[in-house]
Length: 259
Image (cartoon, rainbow, N blue to C red; front, side):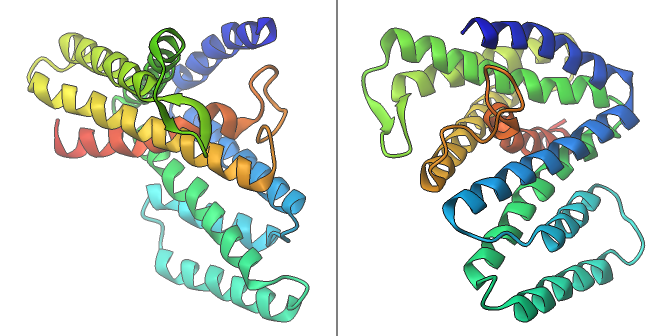
């Protein structure tokens, strides 16, 4: 726990500083985050006995990430990426089975497509404030869930995926996220409707908790306790950012359609 707290005390201000430096720094951070997350997933695949398509996987990851901007011939590039996957799958068969191919490309899409929303927010005029909004909603859900779950948690939410998750903790996460959303409404979005921010808090916390449960279930299936060891006291990239990955698209669509 001591290592976990020290890492958080150092890591959180560092993260805020990187986000504050500007859009190029935010883009670089999320690109690195996506590559490290996919690397962790590929390592877990290998430990389980699958053979990841490393080169095609990273190519597809880049293509999914590129969705944040309208680059020329984007559809054609996706076609070439899929062709690369098909060719390598056929040429390497049976050394690489089709289950490994499907899992590899899904993982590339999961990391690349969802984190492309972080890139989209990063280049917005209020990119720093909005990306921090996404982080704060995520952290609020995690903290609220931990506090409520440790104090009142009795009813298991999904014991097969994550034995420590409870419905009481889930409610605490939602309440804390709603509070953060309403605080942002109060200070930054005075022209919008407060009930929309209540809805955002509910949706963001729901996304955060399902993102956490999804990665928890994946680690359990792959036989891994943590996704990696990169972050002292926290595990890997996916252990720390699994919730954020699903929160950031929710914040993006909220910004686009609600405010």
